[in-house]
Image 1 (tube, rainbow, N blue to C red):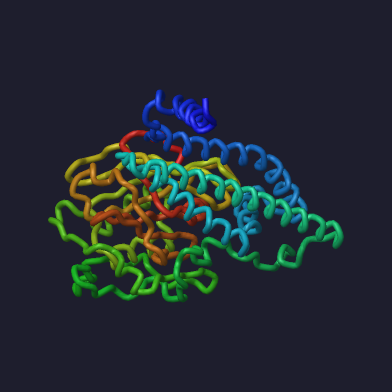
Image 2: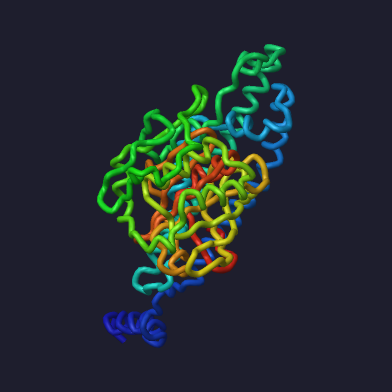
Length: 401
């Protein structure tokens, strides 16, 4: 047999297995694969929190003891201490990644032609989230260690902690979110908006404002720039019988929060002057246990005059420091809701729309024509500060994000 013929035989033998195997099998990707990456990311974040949280909590308790923090103020002061420029920058990165993770992974239909690309993108987001959360834990630990060492060297508390000195206010009550546009100080009640389809207070004083006052000198007031609210969809005026008056919302807030503080009254008034009467509201509580990054979740009751009451649930990512595990109360004002089912969607925050006064804050969120205005106080204000979106469901969701 000649060398040429022998070579042909070798080539035939080499390609025979591939020929017998038939065409190459395409790599498959399913919705379950997408869900598995999200579940894996959540599990990794939970493990990171579990690994770092006991150590950070212990260090914060030690710092509180050294600084003389009372039990009542310990949580707020710990969160205040941990807030700095680097932490806010890491939180902003993590928040964007968490939103992207949820948006990519939450689509009902999976297109086979793009599934594999989405899967690889989710894996990359997961890796970045773990890196950012790890960096945040290391940064927090180093800050606490440095402060404890400084206190040990000086043998006394910092001047800011000495009696008679006013401690700085909680960062989330005096500073806009890193994603928000700068907000200038202003009176507690901004001038009524005159945009099309936006109601203004009637001339006959139909909107009672007897509980509203200007902020005291030590109360930080932040009002969003007027152009920010241009992102909101038009207000849809409905029959007055289906909408709630400011007096009704005040009464609901007073019964829910226990009292109607000047800050709470101002925020409610601002919502009415900005967007008119809501045709629904939600009263509920939020909770969570992640110190570094994880899930904020809540449940409550949606109240409308047309559909009565029904139980609703919501969840969203949180990357801000949640030092404690206690739940916090929140009221949502709901606008343009035609059917209760329209609430079950993902509502994105309107950047720069945060309005904060006297320890009470509100940020507008939207999905299509439906607008939400969550109102939070104290711990709830800090808890909600870094949530880029809220997703409502009719049942308690197991989706980690």
